[in-house]
Amino acid sequence: MNTQNISQQLDRMDRELRFLWQEAHEESIQSIKERKLKQYWELFKAYKKQKQFLMALDTK
Image (tube, rainbow, N blue to C red; front, side, top):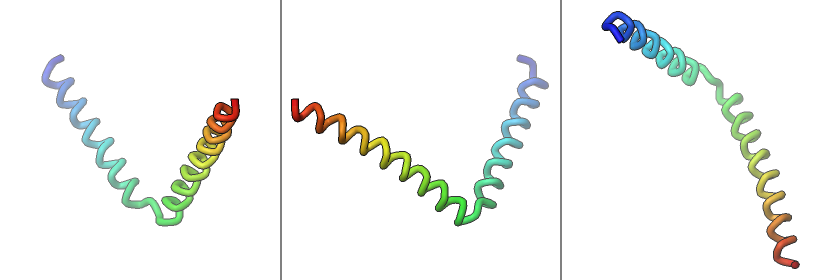
């Protein structure tokens, strides 16, 4: 890689990081809550299936 390519890649990476940082700070409390509730619900469903599977194994 030449120096210009490295410089361009570093600049692009820096812009991406700044964009993600700004996006994270602009996210509202409501959207954070909605995302967390969705994560919780997906995990709850997975645990419920896992529990049913383990209980079925236990009864055999």
